[in-house]
Length: 491
Image 1 (cartoon, helix red, strand yellow):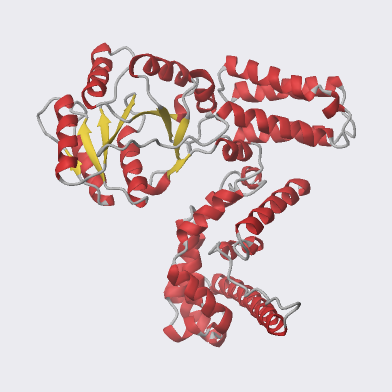
Image 2 (tube, helix red, strand yellow):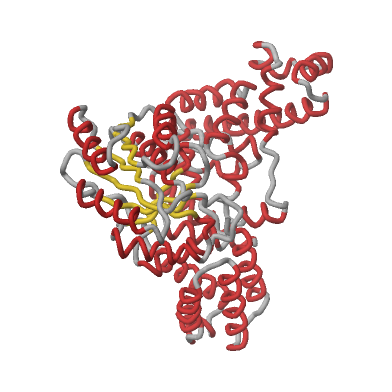
């Protein structure tokens, strides 16, 4: 969503990096470019004015102007101020000691409240809680049916109370949760217009009746400048605790979403980056600021990889080191990449990745996974376990069975060959490490080498990230910081 803004800001930084020393005129020109980039991205003009003023004041100090790397200092200051504008630190859901906790969602019509409710329920369920959804939208046709269908897909029950008043439905849902030992109730209220006083009052009445622990407002990231007026109006009437920004993966400029925290003082708690139930993510201001500035979100990749990994994959990793890389392993890695958000999602979280995507027109052929899966599924069991036996005749048969050309089969075989070689090198390194551990130095044993915790990245040419997970938390974070620094310096 912030592609254009990211490109504009990085163009400005590139011009600064091209100068050995910065003058006051250089800083003024850069701030003017940043101001225009933010305004064109639909960021609220008052927010932009304050942001640019604070950033310029910090950049004009002697500490920056006379430093050996003034351009890098400017980038750091912009990053700090952007992070501050977005909220500085993560704002988590606050749960009380009562059972059940009640979370009430409010927002305009079409903002994505119902899907946000389901995504939040899915997230809480993954965290070990037992949510219950309350269908309090009695006005939109089939709203309760939609919630029931989506809730059924993720295994979360829905309390409907068909024909009852929304306030009574909310009360009934709480009693239902008590009766069936559900510890969280998510109240999905009806969407409303800013000018609809009756509907606004209904939200106030529901809040007064159920006394929610958290009131979250769902806002559409594609709303634009008007998003500020929307959240301000709801803040006056329902005094919500935080914001869920939906449709952040859309094509709109998205600057309105950057204004929410600064204008209302209400933190952004979650962002929705897709349509699937698992697309709701906690909002980290520092990570979002880095992604906007083209620095990526490598920590986010690590977390996604850890979620995708399971005990079976760790066992498979050990086997790969012992026996080599099979086509079944390649298929598993491709599935893992899909689970982590696909090539586009992962590349967009790498330092400089979003810019590279923009230069390619924002498109990556995710269909290559489906094509390669069809090729692998057209192989026999023996061919998948021993790809080296696949000769020209077999390749022709596989291509015909998968509906692709022999050239495409050859391309997949080449990928497998490269990855198998890498496994061989890793196996050699692991054996050397173990041998060194047996000999010992000053009584210390060598570390046993583990497979990386980022499954599937080699399938898209990102095997260089495989060093993560080979040490403790401190060493992993040190490696992360080093990698981010290296990739920023290469730009």
